[in-house]
Length: 478
Image (cartoon, rainbow, N blue to C red):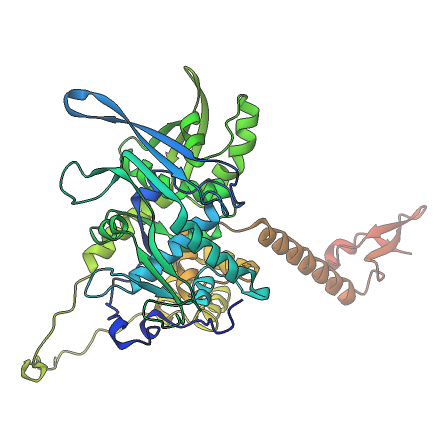
């Protein structure tokens, strides 16, 4: 563990005045712009464990050229000898890193180097650094992204570059990395991590050859295959938006994700069910099917509600955002005369006792949601607000922005873990038991167990008391 590594926001990090970045205000968004190549080409394998021993990973694609001619494109990934092929754990850090890079845009573009403290990335991922092992994971990740080779045979895309835009060459994701505590050129000791994107990565990011990933929801996923599929789904579902479903050959899916290909349907379902059901629970998919194909199997993905919500939200963000205009001499601006017409009275809808309690939860620590927004949520989505607020304490990794998270959770009906419903049922059972004890205590007819001895004149028996005088008057006490 590097002791001096600490969490500092990007704008304050660069101590060298020549390196200091101008942090540009960007539209408020929940999405991270992820460069398309690494995702669409299958750079990350669907596992959290290091993929060692493989000499390479080969992924092929079929493309249509001029005159309808079909060709085969190929990309080969060469792993680092020490760390193996990149995994979904590396994908987690890659998305977090791109979020950091976005915050460090200079003059509207991303420039090298990108700098960050290791603790900052851990914080963004919702991780703690106990024992220093998580710090070492970040340094290993930097090695993986620098040492993994990408050989493109017409598959890697470079937007805006002359020619066909598709490259035939060998690349790396990071051109150079100087980690915390190592020497920079000139002999200066790096007080944070310095990363230089390769030319093609920088080019594609600045020319917006990217796809959006909702990082907050992505971090809630636990299955490696589910995580690996999320960015791919952004591409596939967009391409098939009109049909509302997308079909992918099972064998191609296995090669892309670098997972074992099974022969029997039962084994395929056993491997894929947890991942696809988790994506379904989070709204990425409405449903999915595994069907027999001519020479194997195919997986059918049905567009989930989240895809359409996210797309509408991104379009709305683009329409609402306007870059602020610079005014050289704001004193000369003519201000409008104040209106003489009284403002209309604001009618605040009445709330129930339950809604009042939810309102108090939303507007206080740790959420601090504005009064107006909180009222909108509890009056329009009372049941969902109660559910998401009840489930929030069960989260293992609290989000950086609790207020923003809880708003999205209520509006988008986030997946609630089974533990919430179990706790709710236990609480309800406890309330019912207490209510019964209170009834027994207030009743003068029954004993401490809730029963009374009654007789029909011949036989004595124990009867469960209803605690209603009208009902119990029908029976004769012993």
